[in-house]
Amino acid sequence: MKANGEIATLALKSVIMRDYKKLDVWKKVHTTYLFIKKDIVSKFPKDERFELTAQLNRAALSIPLNIVEGCGRFSDKDFAHFLDTALGSTNEVDYCCFAALELKYITDENYQLINNLINEVRAMLISFLKFLRKE
Image 1 (cartoon, rainbow, N blue to C red):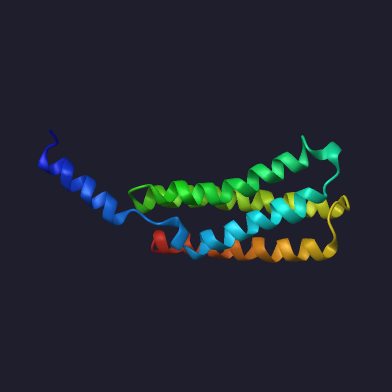
Image 2: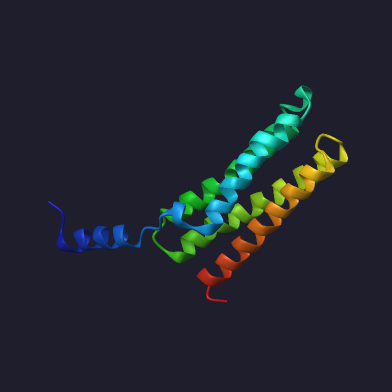
């Protein structure tokens, strides 16, 4: 049988738990991930599948996954840690897409689209981090 304090803590956690699907930053990054998966890496040459393709896929998926994992954390400090990691992955995606452009794996048009999305995600993450840290 659980002690009253433990039950109260569990009840409080369930009230505070964030629903990632309601976060604007998650919605934006989910759209960005789908665009990268369907319209960016699918254009890469097959011989890149173990290098740039795999790295970009991992980094792009890491952003929404870190937001989701952070939503399951109890404190704003813990949540911010996962948003920091998502921000790092955002920067990684940014570079991978720039490299893909330079290597002529993607068009200028697709690069501009993904670059705009990534910049929006970056700004949203930074803003959210500032809010959580009360800066």
